[in-house]
Image (tube, rainbow, N blue to C red; front, side, top):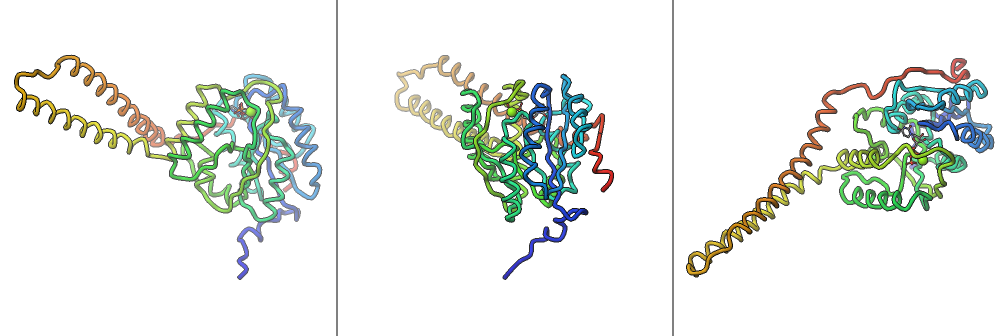
Length: 332
Ligand code: UDP
Ligand code: MG
């Protein structure tokens, strides 16, 4: 039996062409942004049948990125520029972009440092036209530093074992998202954002597209170790409560061990009163071990509690200082 997907009716834009919007987060990319846009335009020129929009979100860059973006907008009427009032972070920039593109038939999220090759996005569009709702780019290889590769491997391994939702490995935010999935994602307003987990959580037909990740074209990474750790914690805490369960498991294990010890002490006392149980060393080690464990466990609880607090504040996710819509948009 043929089931017609709901999408088919609303897939066609007003001009009769499908609308595909690129969401492009920018943070201190002045050195490479013009080259990036040129590469993107060159790649997408092969699809004149599509109605394209390029939505750049300037995430409070400290360099001249915004001026460069506004210049791009002057030269290309498909460019929209959003600018944050300060640096809110990559995940928020992408969120703002998705919010602004709710009426596109598909949205493609990609980095603006040319690490995500533009031509891969065209393969994504083809898969989408074949009926896939989310096409996520999976790294077959990556040319980052050995340290970054090792930490990323460890993180994905851990996430894979712990997360309640199945989140694909070696997948960044480079992906195509169909309109109906964008609508679902925009209902997830958590402040501690791990978008690739949210998209996985939404469901629908999701498929991987393998690609080779390039080196950064210019500038430097906006994800130093500190931000990476925070991001990894968001991923784990947002999609798993396993650490909380481990606490009680560990508690049981230690309690069982201490019962055994008590039995041993009692046995020595009763059966061999002439032998004394070694005293202070044993106490000291036990004390440090237990208080250390308790502090760690309190930290785990605190991490979740902190998240509850942040979510309870329910603040807006970002603030825009400037919105310069693509000029074509007004005509629509
Ligand atoms: N980015 C952002 N806000 C930030 C950090 C990065 O919008 O606070 C953008 C950045 O311009 C790039 C993308 O997010 O387009 C990915 O960042 P980056 O390349 O620095 O991360 P990496 O590829 O090193 O993980
Ligand atoms: Mg990068």
